[in-house]
Image (tube, rainbow, N blue to C red; front, side):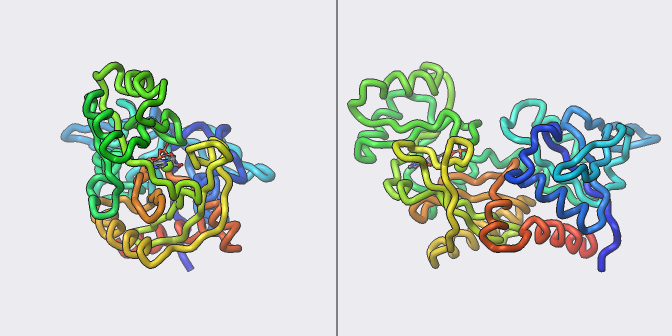
Length: 319
Ligand SMILES: Nc1ncnc2c1ncn2[C@@H]1O[C@H](COP(=O)(O)OP(=O)(O)O)[C@@H](O)[C@H]1O
Ligand SMILES: [Mg+2]
């Protein structure tokens, strides 16, 4: 048995949650089921005070309660986040200035409250750039703002590549670039803001037709995986743009990849992460608000969100 704990969720407005799809919804549901108190707050609700007399991180928070098949938030009051047991940071990308500041406010909780994911890890790990820390597992990739370098790269990797904005999510702005395509130059001009902005360009992985595997990693260990298959005629497998979801397993190579990357994730306080794998290659490391646990739960026939809450309970007790 576990004692009731206080869980704070730093997230988007509650109304935006999709009850049967949202991973954060799953966490809140599981935490309430296990008898914990859940608090809702936006990143703009967080404050930090410092001075000889008092140092604290506080937030205007609203208790979350069940309301039929969904949730409702009760009246707002100021809470000390240092008195919460776990803070889940689940705000959807983009990682903008406000998000960056919030991670620094949350630094004030270091040593008192478990923050998932660690604010330092969130700051350090851009979802596209962090994947480059694992060159053994990544496809050929270049991050540059130079249009000439991008076009040369496309030719070098066989005339077909995928270009991505560094701050995107849900497939937004991810496009195929083909040598000789009428739009190739326009796409590169557009995403680099005519050579002024960094983008990622990556070799095209034909295995994407079979799907983009989302591996959910909890504290360095695989919790499970789902396969997202792009809609017919579409490059992007993201659920958000119509990718369909299928059950899947990890191949021995993928398991080795996950264990290798997982050790580093754990070190960096990136406890709840979604790895994107195409054809056994690591294309993206989702750390801000990875999704997929609800689909995984359906395939497993049990609530994987409860595994995450149970892990947090153990982590708080053990330290
Ligand atoms: N190197 C690649 N080769 C083929 N398809 C890719 C490649 N990289 C991404 N994709 C496709 O684009 C989608 C989105 O890319 P991803 O890097 O995961 O960015 P996002 O943050 O938008 O999810 C993937 O689900 C996949 O379908
Ligand atoms: Mg992705």
